[in-house]
Amino acid sequence: MKQLKFLVIGKDQVILDTLKRIIEKNEGWKAILVNDENLAYDAVRSHQPDIVLLSSGLEDIFEQDIKAFCQEPDQNIKVIEHYGGGSGLLLSEVEACFSEPQETGHRVLHKADSREKAALDWLSGGKTFSFGDFYHPERVQFGALRVLNDDTIQSGKGFGTHPHDNMEIISIALEGTLIHEDNLGNKTEIQPGDIQVMSAGTGVMHSEFSKDEGGFGKFLQIWVYPKQRNVTPRYDQITLDPAKSHNSFQQILSPDPEDAGVWIHQDAWFHLGHFDDAFETRYQIMKKGNGVYAFIIEGNAEIDGQKLERRDGFGIYGMDEIHIKATSGNTEILLMEVPMAW
Image: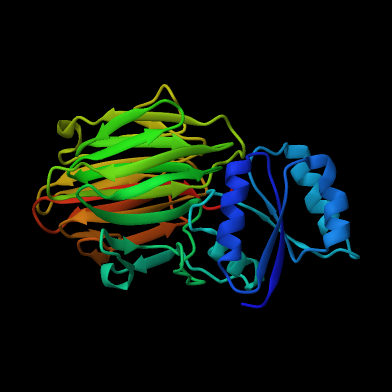
């Protein structure tokens, strides 16, 4: 991509510094940091950036005003509301900023072998949507669902302490044990049957490692855009009752703190089910305008006529319910209902 000048505005200096490092890894990209909203307008005038990147901790009224200011005819500066801190989303956000909108249908199929493969000496797995150095204009997100990574981490290895902001981050453990530690005071173990959630909000620092006992830690890493930026960071973790998901979809996430499962700052509902061969069921959409992205964790299934295999993903929207049939024994399906616009 061409040379670009960024003006990055935010309140969390750690996240600002991280973004500067990420930006300036790209040849020809330069980042100027501003941590005081009162200085932002003069900085835009004096530096004339190509992109104003809004990071964490900013007031809503300021974000609205600076966007309007940058979009004035004599400015015409692109503005990105950044989500995720040092998350690996920046390249996708910038690419999308300069790309034409993609037309999408009411169904989208992502076969397991079409996902981008993570192939480090300590990390393997698949990326369903654009992430890090992987960018595909037709695979940036499904509505508010932004990241679906299927990660396998070598024992004793993992993600060192790093920042996130303005993202709802969900981890579902599949095998092994993960050790989580954050600057909110949490140090926990995440094991199969556990689901973890972080509302990154104005900024959180955390690490995730596979426990050093041999073998691997396997988990799904899922990120959902929040419906409100700059909320207070929070952490939660629960252990699911597997009996509730046998031949049934067990609710594991919702927008309601009093409801079953964990909760996030978005009108989203996740359900998990383990099904016997040939078992059939229906899923009713919880909120009008939402879509459902199904991920086949294990086994095979057919959803509204679409045949799906292990680790396939299938998004569908524009209807009130979907029909699901397991076509093999021990079929495990994750349904992620999310807003298509928010």
